[in-house]
Image (tube, rainbow, N blue to C red; front, top):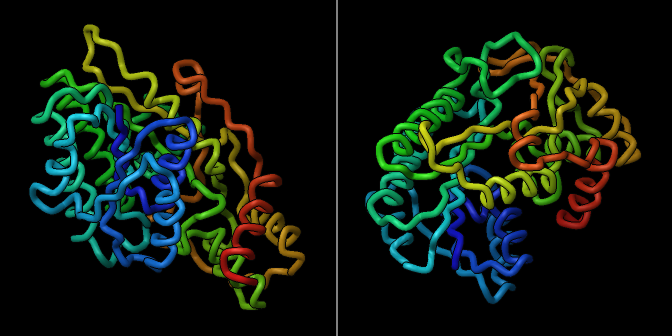
Length: 324
């Protein structure tokens, strides 16, 4: 059978699709190749996937009426990994309409198409650690309330979880939401801190350090995230008294100071960073930290890559990809 992966030209979607192909799955990718960041990177990812015989790409927009329904009409598709989304917390401050269209309408189109077609054994979709918003209790546990988002991006992800739960309850659709914690690694996005910091450090230009460096993040390496996504995909929620919907944290279970993160990049690049200390930005939270007890118990999720090992792998890839 076949897995449909939305956002297959994106960072996490590409990485998940590649891992599924490596284990012998057939994969249909679905991506709009949105120009939010350099499309050449998305094309390069897609070209890597196209090297596999079991892969084909559908270029369309999940927010367009009927687009996803047409893609999922292939009877061979029995599972969906929905990773397409408009990412970025700060971008949602100035472009809110894009987030409603892509994240809310887009996910509705995906889940409604799965319901109408039938025969989908499992829908796995991306949520975010951002849903924890203003929570002060650490680490963040899946049982914690998510009713205080501090960005529209976070609000759209929380809405997606509620809609997925409702569909699972009403239509017995097995669905699992995964709250990703600051994913990084090779083939990562140019709008994320690791790319921005590495580029600026190598160029000898200042890097923006928000909240004057008083930030901590649960940085999670892409290979660990991929392992968690596939483990979730292979374990659809069982039928029972509750809706067949589950939510899990996928994080490294270690909250790292931002300044240490920068120090590791300095070592990996053999360059010193020039820090441009700035205040906390609207929509940001000062700390994230994943409680992964549930994902370890139910999915066998065990993150294995520290930033000391993961950041040098990104820097090596970055140099090769950009010819630096």
